[in-house]
Image (cartoon, rainbow, N blue to C red; front, side):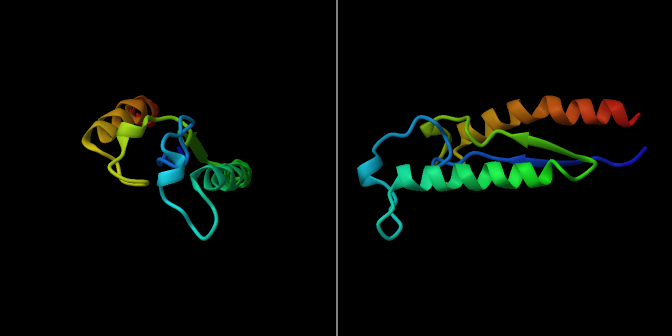
Length: 101
């Protein structure tokens, strides 16, 4: 059987739905977190749309899930975040391994 490739789009604090403390967080030039969230979401949707045209790629888009405490900063997972992401991804990998036999 042909090998499948997983493309996993992981969340960051910028991508999650529930944004807090917007005014005091990361800023880039005159853009705040809310602005960056909109830009990132457009980028993610475009990327996933393009990747979905490629055969043999399973796209796992979990970019919008997560909670603020899953991260130690804007992009690095906390221990809790690592555990939550592993719980979410485990069924995908177990299923892929089961289907490879």
